[in-house]
Image (cartoon, rainbow, N blue to C red; front, side):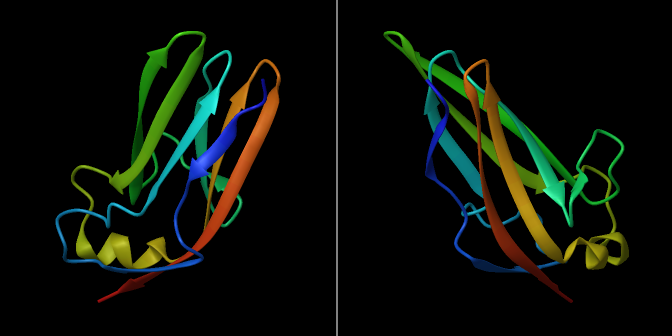
Length: 112
């Protein structure tokens, strides 16, 4: 079954670049069969392991034939407050499995 994203960020999220963690609202949770994998994007550019500002981690949980995956956005370890200022914009999470994909978007406003 195509991923169904049941929890996602609100349309607008304000974050403070000096905070040690991002708001817990910056996560996507889906239920799918088979389980999904996530990609995150900032302004249509994929957030990869060498991204200066963000990283994310996926946490799957299997119940019967269904897998619920939680993917949470976080500051990249070692990112500076100056680098984090560049983290504002359109954030998108995309959950994909063999059956298809689903995505949700939000606007993130990084405040100094």
